[in-house]
Image (cartoon, rainbow, N blue to C red; front, side, top):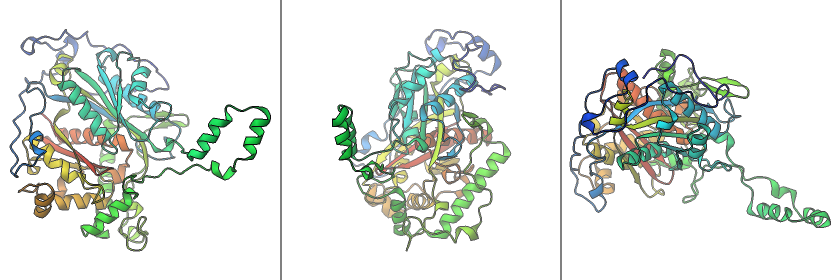
Amino acid sequence: MPPRKKSVTAAVQQTLPEAKSATPAQPKPAAASKPAASKAAASKTPAAPKAPAKAAAPTAKPVASTARTVRKLGNGQDRIAIVAGLRTPFSRSWSDLNDVDPVELSTQVARELLFRTELRPQDVDQVIWGTVISVVRSPNVAREVAMNLGMYHCSGFSVSRACASGFQAMASAAQQIWSGECDVVLAGGVDVTSHAPVVYKKKVVDQLQKLQKLKGMGLIKELAHMNPMDFFPTPPALTERYTGKTMGEHAEEMAQNFSISRRSQEELAISSHKKAAAAVQSGKLASEIMTVQTPKGPVSTDNLIRTDMDAGKLAKLKPVFDRRNGTITAATSSALTDGAGCVLVMRESRAKELGYTPMGFIRSFAFAGQDPRENMLLGNVYSSPLALDRAGLGLADMDFLEIHEAFAAQVLSNIKMFNDKAFFRDKLNRDTVLGEVDFSKLNVRGGSMAFGHPFAATGLRIATTLLNTLRDENKQFGLGTICAAGGMGTAMVFERN
């Protein structure tokens, strides 16, 4: 539903106002339920929900794990509706959002979404929040958000699945609704790399713990034996514990393994920034991004999008992960980013009772894993066939496709394997491939190389933008997919009506 004209932020309001809508009717059997009076009168009542189509059986010979992949999701009656979505601006780490901690940033975007939709806090059954970089004093961000909004009845729980944490928050919301435990869930994600905890050596931690118990000369003697050099913290690093390599090093391996040229990577990066800049200029993203209040003033726009990407300048940049033979540069990688986002997820019948017209619906989703030592960021190819099977659809049925751009090399490698018969036969035990990707349908409003990648918030951005694109272009189906650390991948199929 359309946003209010005036915005509300943490700087001017700490509690939510009562919604203007009438108290929702008590739940009744589907045939007898009625929309809330004030909102239902303002908008046309959606058509009665249809049961999701049964997922088509996979064409490949089944393996041990495929029996569960085609199981129909949900209860066959209500679909999982996404009523609204919103995010903060995405900012390069240690820049515009440097002074806002993850809990505060999450609270601001959650408060604003509830304000715009005029949903009463008491109508929210659960808060689920994704995060990758741990918040030391507030490890359960979801509960902190619930309490900050006065929703003490929401126990709140946080999830972490690396870069797929945003999709996991939405998937967990869907599962809570399908189980009958919830009707309305606020699902979000946040990561503020600027606030990454500083880690000290275990030796220093032990010494500091000992110092707390000492006094007088004992304290002075212990301090005299300490080496000041030990107090230098260990810098944060995006290194895989299992493989000992960074994400960029794994992406560089993929570029070499799948013969992804540097030129093709740079062309994809330029395209991502151009499409993002065009989407911003046209106003297509305006309703998705709120203004964040910071100690230094309001922040309203993303600050990583470049309108002056020049192919000649990009060709002169030095590789960053393999300086001698590498092809990946800073321009063809997503930057460290701060940001948060959230969506309002409901049972379709509950959305109708409250008078909402959903943006769209989650038709299916899947998570998959692979050995991270072999092409670690290829998880999209493992998860996408599962999600499409569950939806009873194919890649050709997708009107738009969103592939998270961790690195241009990773995107192009996944796209190449989508249509590789040998890979599908040997790795996935499937007789048919997903098919060739139509680049005119890919990341049509820009991707993570342009917007940035605040790990757990990226999935919320993808879902919101994809559903808005389907609405604006009057299309039906979209596939969002994200690779993740640890050799994981996730995919989610969305439908508009």
